[in-house]
Length: 298
Ligand code: UTP
Image (cartoon, rainbow, N blue to C red; front, side, top):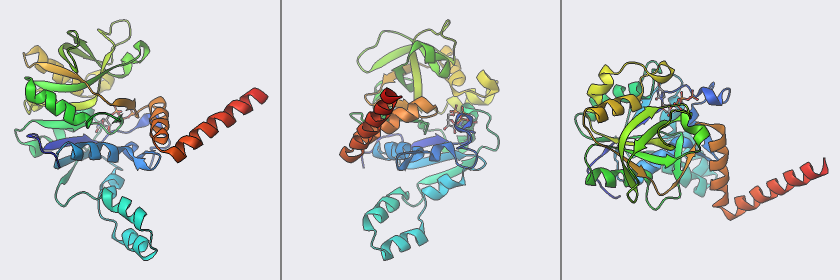
């Protein structure tokens, strides 16, 4: 496993996932699959591949399935072994995390992403750390997206966020950056604003669910008043730090980003993943052809 100086990664998974109701009434949003892999597993694999070995999950009510997913499933594994389903068994076993590497802490009320991160404060103990949002998938990059942020963190001062350009009509979904011209993979950020309307957005450059943060962020989160949607926003605390002189760098990650907190992004991620597999790619093309033929005939 590749090692880096930052070992702790926080996965905030305490949100309600209202955009996917009723699917998320009894199932955590982060367990929704892209084909056969839950969203949370993609980001955990990303963090492990980047060398993180202390994984902190900030859970909430009804999120127990996530804890079980990363545990050993003794009876299931035994049954698969007895039935000779060894490839499936291998996939199931690959989900269980190394002993002691995961901590689970409860966000008792979904008061926002910033509040979820604040809940992990005592587990982070004064060291820089990563935050990965399970509903933002970044696939097919040259390196794990979070490793690209670590690389930028090691060569710049202050906090680091992943960035990508989004359509103008989508800026009100995201934290948006005002920034200097792009310099290779990075840009120096001048200001950051949460969910601006398209009319006042300073650019189309959105923050996309990956952060490397200084532990000083906790002082800001503690003082942070509720912002957009009445929630304690991580973006607002990063913005306050920036205004106080802590630089902020945006990293244009090399992978393709899918917003799986929204239906359009989930569909795109599913098709992207399916096209990586020759058998599934044929199924996608067949489904599109059938749908086109039906439309032409009607
Ligand atoms: P979202 O902003 O997508 O919110 O959270 P949400 O509640 O999950 O979904 P919608 O908007 O109601 O459909 C982004 C990430 O932050 C976590 C979520 O679980 C998700 O992974 N989060 C959000 C928390 O951990 N706690 C919160 O209070 C809010």
